[in-house]
Image (tube, rainbow, N blue to C red):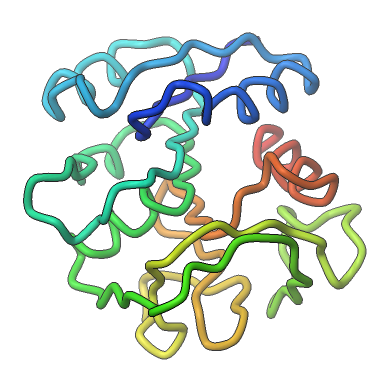
Amino acid sequence: MHIGIVDMRRDRDFVHRIVAATKALGYKPLIINGITTPPDKLLERIKASPIRHWIFSGSQLHVTHPDNPQLPLELLTLDKKLMLICYSMESVLLQLGFPVKERHVHHKGPFNLYPTVTHPLFEGIQTPMKVWRDHTWYIPKAAIRPPIKLLAAYNGETMIATYKNATLVQHHPEHTADGRKFLNNWLKE
């Protein structure tokens, strides 16, 4: 089976972890550069593709900077499953009017995440989930409101949510065993 990966980073080495994780799960990734592909062309390419599951990576870019690319919100209307990781999650929520906050210290490394609801995405994963974060920007948990459904938060930050056809993930699932189980559960949806 094929899976689409949209690389939102400028350095090409970053996406190798997502590629390796999806290959280990038995998928063949098609990689699109989300930085150099104009948003309208990206939307057209994904819409025309037979691939059903698309992962959008994180990025070292600051999501609130006006020169940095934003994901087209029309992606949320497609009959595709999207996993929006870190920067990609922030891009969509920013455009939907949610506040994106910057912390003064960059957080990177493993932490324990406690899901706040029962959901098929957490099937077979022990609580707490061992996950990995690598971010400066975040969406406050208190800002999340319907129709966004909060699934997990950490220290007041939104970590996992769902909206329409998208799973919004602040942590990087490709870095840990629990994250890869989470990714595998998403791929089975």
